[in-house]
Length: 290
Image (cartoon, rainbow, N blue to C red; front, side):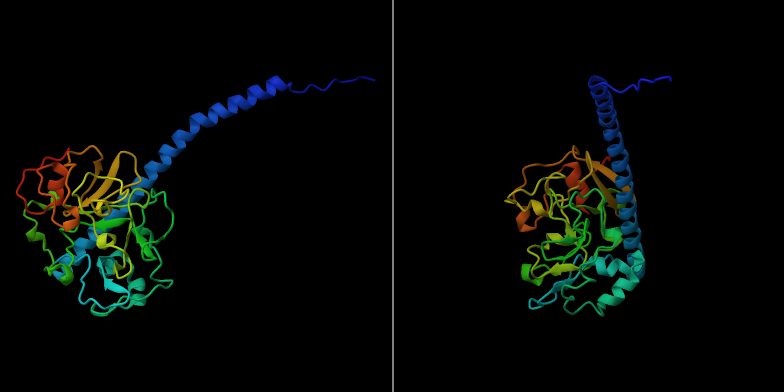
């Protein structure tokens, strides 16, 4: 009878195979992550593109851009309707707006419920490392996209600021040179909400963004209202929609003023730096985009 001796891996051979597999995984993982981030960045760009087109459609309908919020009185228990609800019909979200039933936008916003805590995908950037779809500052549905305070102007009598809605003709620096909307995630930033100004939200920064400080400035202890800035989970910078409907990826290294200390007053940074110039709508400074 023939006898066959069964061959097996030695311990050393097994360790070599495991080491080779580990090396291959180590080589492939960054490539997979890079592909995933490229897809996330593209999805984010598409979301902002939709926001830009919705804003233009709103302007065409009402001959003005929406306000980030309109604080009509100081006694509403929940808050005040904001830009996100007003844009919903132009974002194919009419059914959600119907559930919210804003009417003439003069009343209180609904309290916390399934609808107000929802987060339609168009409001979410997939690169936000905080996957929570509810912003814990107020517990309403999250938005990773926030309009410029100087374009979707807020109206707040408590701060002595009762403003008219901005029209495209008011943007004398040019719509292709002016931020309409940017990103804010919830790792370095506070994120935002699409509902509007929340009475118990802690800050109106949840409704709009500013460019007083460099992009992706970490909130940290927030001594200078960094919470109002735009931040992103993308590597190297963040996406912006411009007032002409175009999209640009703005580098973290864009020319920017770094020492502004009056952000908490709400007065826009007047410094003549590219990032601040793109934020302001009528400063008259010459802008050359990279």
